[in-house]
Length: 201
Ligand code: SF4
Image (cartoon, rainbow, N blue to C red; front, side):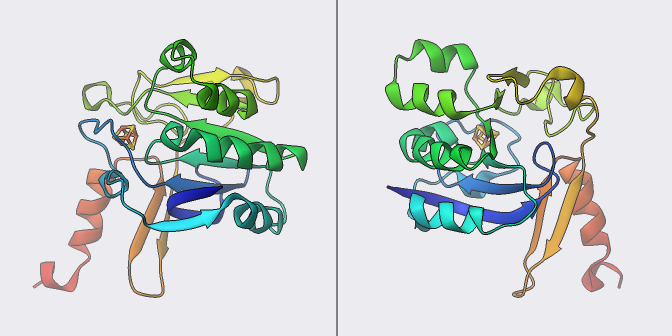
């Protein structure tokens, strides 16, 4: 099966426990106010990769403990992600899935693709970003409504407390700056712009 990606990172320590392969899907219908990933909203073909090619790429990475799915909305491509998740879990890797939906909504939807992705997920972080509940005190999330749902015993509440929010900044070959992780992105953008030559004149 194919997955329509916005982007992937082979290694990051800012999107879940330990070092992880991270995969942002393209397409999200929720359009939460204050979302920092608006470029992932359109349901247009962006970077199409097969689950088997992604599996090979993921398992070629050394020293990763798992894979993180975020977006975009992973449950809008649940079937393909569940297939990929099953393959990587067979290799001993963990799966963390972010979703803008509430866990109860996913369970009550009686959608077998949703059920399959939930069955392959160790840690679900649910709830879209809510601007008026902005809170950076917990790892990997930006608002108070978001919850950690432990769907297996791979992770637990105590372990999560050992992590703090952080961001990673990458300057790519084309000069594009890619920031991931969780932080005050408005302040970061402001600070970066203050460093621009045009703003220092
Ligand atoms: S679900 Fe996530 S990607 Fe989609 S709009 Fe909300 S915060 Fe943005």
